[in-house]
Image 1 (spheres, rainbow, N blue to C red):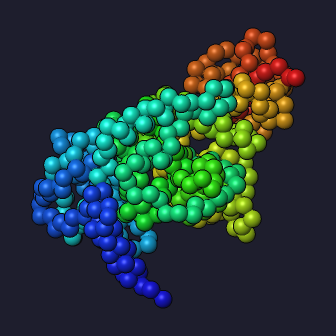
Image 2: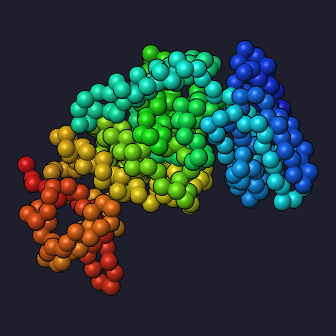
Image 3: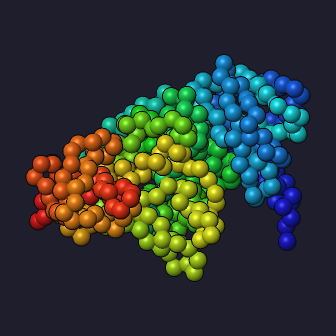
Length: 412
């Protein structure tokens, strides 16, 4: 049996072999033993980095340019250390300043050089403009073969999976980067170098400008949306992973990004015959698991006392709090292109905190942004005063308010 430290050595040794090989221009690793502060001079062309240490450095700070960032490190169970979030910038870094609160051990700064030439940017722009028409068609998707030009190809032989769940993530990277092509390339380098994965972990990435970037490459053998990824706590079978690029713990994703996410999800659910408010057992065919929403957040993979998936705050509070609204927006999109959401097109209760609303009692009506639009006496059917669509209905039952999301529309 190989020990944890042997695994650590092999993995670090593998990283060094990668760094000195044919793609040496893409990555570099620096060993730093900081004092009270340490100004680290970076190699040429570095536009992304992460920090690895043998101890948890969460709460310490690192200065990038004129901005200080708080480190958030997570345990790397494979090699027994801690790795920080990935920092992204738009222009090459001259130096990074480490600001330890206490004495730090030896740390490693893993550097990524995702720079690209003008031809790549032109090709990306052309791919972005080549969208398919149709209400439930996918948004324009930039192929990996286009945005990855000049970087090492992923390992051959991607695996396929039949998707029953779509998992939403955030990259937890800095929100200040606006060169989205560069950001996606650096995320790719981080996944295939530091993580040692075959390819980028997600099936798709969505940036703040609404661009959708193809993730895992099917290499002509598998559709990209059905390539088995590396994003859901080592339980990736039956899932498609979509990553919103940025840190959405406190900040909210852009409306443009959420619109592209909605369109991508509607296309995938229509393609697979899935329901936006559905749920099914995950992992499929496994002896241990649980009922998982069809559209879920990464953190839904951990159920204390039920299922011990990895514990995470992903996709960030400002995405996760709006998951019901996202499901409803996807449902509206599906309905608009003739897809049957639920068992019919009538008033169909879904994903409720109560299984139904009481017939004959008043309910307050809100739109999907939580804005009050009126009230009605709930009769379990379409009220003519409201346009067809998804609404949040709240009603007093006993001593508390209950909430339900309903599609109020004409029954066919």
